[in-house]
Length: 344
Image (cartoon, rainbow, N blue to C red):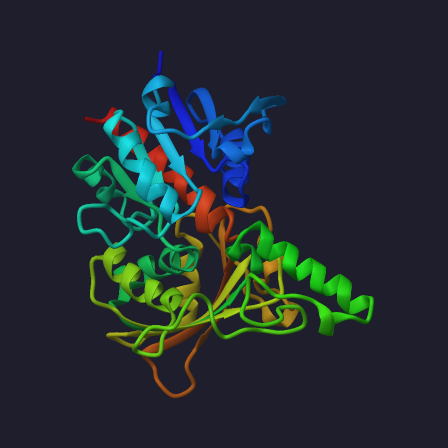
């Protein structure tokens, strides 16, 4: 009889936490017990799981040991992970953390299972595995098979990131502003989650600016790509918040060490794990945020050679940032960890 696992979801009633619960319900995960955790403010609330209402339990330093947790999925913010993830690891759980807190720690593996599954076993260093930034995950899924085939040397990315990347309150801010627009009072609408009005607008800033003129979000894509792919690929990103609810899109310009053919790249990507190629411009078939809603795949289209450089190709990719960019990747890490632990 195969082993079943006690799983804790920290931040179970948040935007990503809810998606983790949904993904766990959709797949044949070897689950013995689910423990939804959140701060004391959420006590008295419940989460739905397999037709039952599970009461939220307060996150404490001892809860992981008390509940005999094997896998702890954290999605409650960096400060929460910083404080409580070490307690979970000390209690013997493998921590899979969705925040940015541990990502660049040299002792913590940063994992996208389709790209660097072998790094998962470094979890024994600290008991923690980091989940990358949402924009990085979908990008490296597409980059990996192309780098293997052609030796990728540079990526230039522009992102179109949904408001859900800022959490539930950010999505609510967009909805409220759109309601105010139709009530002819958009100029009175408040913006708290974003530096400017997001409704009927795009904002070329996600997170704060750093000394080099790039934002922290943009530098996450630069630094995380290098760590995940174990390669010094040149990456430049411009990250833009757009007035959609779910689904991050990216326009990628890729430079290789040799000449490349768009048709060959299309074929390679069609065989890559968890990639779906939607690329028939004549039929207006290409990926869009609406395409990827609630999906666990990354969609790629508009694949075309550069008109001037034979070693360049351009493409457009989209993925559900709450799924592929967070919950789905975290659960896939857990699945791969279970598989690799069983092979020891």
